[in-house]
Structures are given as structure tokens and as C-alpha cells.
Image 1 (cartoon, rainbow, N blue to C red):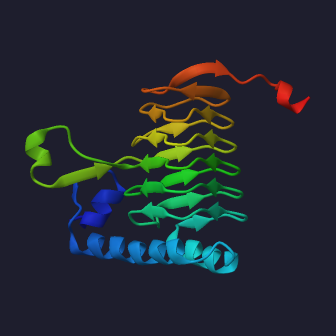
Image 2 (image 1 turned 60 degrees about the vertical axis):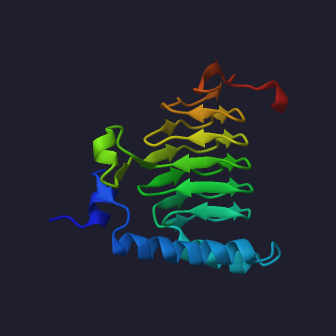
Length: 192
């Protein structure tokens, strides 16, 4: 029989108030609280906390405080990731963020979800779906990324968007729900 944690990690319905999961969220709370209370000038200490909190933490990662997460160990950050102030990541399942991705202030990324059937939901069960955010992405401030979403490389997500479905690579997308506005030109005029 699967433990509640095993159920969570495989996308099955699970009891989020299971003692093991409550303890693991408590551990994450202690670590992100340390991160949130340490000064910006203590980069070595911040990196040490992130390395302990996260599943993987690439080189040259910067996470502004405050930062919040559920477990931490399901968050995979590539090299050069920047996460701005007041980001919340609900990582009941893996959330992978690729190299060079920039995340604006107030962004929320959710792998956690709840059943739409009210009878099942009333039993206190929940589940999760993985989120994949590619490399070299810019996610504007106040964006919400919903469970199960994949965002392709080199994409820009406009501020305030709610990403409910996959977004392809090399596009600018925005809105609620988020949708593709245009493709990115290969030789952007900003580089000329």
C-alpha cells in the first residue's frame, strides 16, 4: 500500500494532513523562514539554505525574500534563475524551472490541486500535477501558473496572466486565461 507521500508524488489523491507530510511542510517552513529573515548581503548563507531546501539549486540562483513553498524538495531550479519578491510555489509535485528564467514579483506557481467533485473534496483529499517552466523565460509580475502546465523555452508571460494550459516555446503570451499573442522574431530589434 502506498504512503500518502507516495500518492502525492505520483498524482494520486492523498491526505495532505498526513503526519509525514505535515512534518515535511514544517521543515520547509523553517528553512524558508530562515531565508526570509537573512539579509541580502549574506549570499553564501542564502545559497546554503536554498541548497538544503530545494530538490536542486543551480549555479548563480537568486531568490528574493519573502519566498514561500510547501515542501521545497520538489522544486528544481536551473542555473541563473532569478525569483523576485513574494513568490509562492506549491510544490506537492515536481516544479522544474529551467536555466536563465526570470520570475517577476508576486508570482504563484501551483502543482497542488483539489478534486472538482465536492464529495471527494469534502473528504480532505487533494492531488498534484507537475509544472515545467523551460529555459530563458520571463514571467511577469503577478502571474499564476496552474497545475500541470508546461511553458516552452524563450517565452514571455505577460504580467497578471493566469496560465491554465500549456504555452509553446518562442512566444509572447498574456491574459486570463493566458494565450499566445505573437511569436518571437528570431532577430529581435532590441538586439540590433
